[in-house]
Structures are given as structure tokens and as C-alpha cells.
Length: 202
Image 1 (cartoon, rainbow, N blue to C red):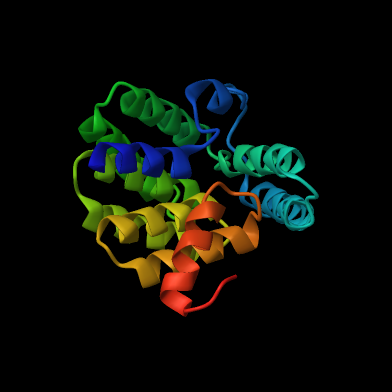
Image 2 (cartoon, rainbow, N blue to C red):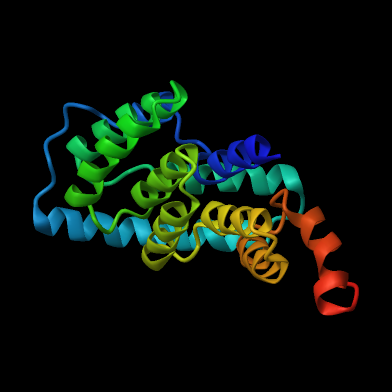
């Protein structure tokens, strides 16, 4: 059961974060200057706002999946070529089950880009691989402080709460995830937990 949960957590916070996706960013592009970075962040935020609106209004699972992938790909871009490269290497380390190396790399990423939510979410996966759910939860909360719409992080918090038999917190976290991504695959868990916790059907 714990191994299954570990896989679910990793999948929840690292969807579309494979090295091949991350390498899509130009590796030779120069670092942006501060005004360029601010302008780029404003455009990125507008795009994300539009995509999250589309995700909330998705008519079916297929449409939601496509929009979610676009959102997740945008979360992979830090605005720093160095941080992006370190994230690629951390993904490779996680794929090789070398969580200690992944954490070492991600420590550097979070120092370089402390506001990058995806870096904290990725480090949460590494901590969980090392059987450290406390630090995993701490990093998930840091990720959500920076990007409250990171639905995978909410789902991962729900999975950790379920592992700790805290069904009330799990239900709250899963509901937060579904409020952002209505076709996320935790819907069945919510339907099962809600009558028990709320005393009523959804």
C-alpha cells in the first residue's frame, strides 16, 4: 500500500515533468533581464489564468486532460536556464530512484528560484521517496503558497493525509484539487469519503 501511495504521490506532483518535456526549453537562450522577466511573468500569468478558466469549464475528461497538460508544461519554466537544467537532472535522478541526488539538485533550484512552485513540488516527491512524509508535506505547502492552483500538490497532500488515516484533511485536499481540475482522478475517492465525513452524499 505504501509503495502504491508513493507512486501516486510522485505522479501527482510531477505530471509532465519528464526530462524530455523540460528539455523543450532552449538551452542556449540567455538569461532574461529583470524588466524582461517581469514582462514575461505577466504574460505567463495571463496565459495561465486563461488556461485555468478553460480547465474549470472543460466538458469532459479528454478536454480537461489536454488543458491540464498545457498548464503543467507552463509550470516547468522557471525563467532561468540554470534552474531548468537542474530540474532536468533532478527528474533524471528521480527516474533512477536516486532521491538523495534529486534533493541535492533541488536544494540548489529552490535557492536560485525560491518562488518556483514546481521546484518545491518536485522536491516533495524526492522526500517522499526517502520515506520522509513530513518534509514532503512541508514542501507541498511551500509549493501551494507560491501557486495555490497546483492541483497535483493538493492531490498529493490528500494522499499523504489518507496514508496517515486523516480522512477529513484528505477530503479537504482532494476537494481543493477537484475545484481546480474537475476531472482529476481523485473524484472517486471524494465520492467515497464524503458520506463518511460529511454524513451525506455529494
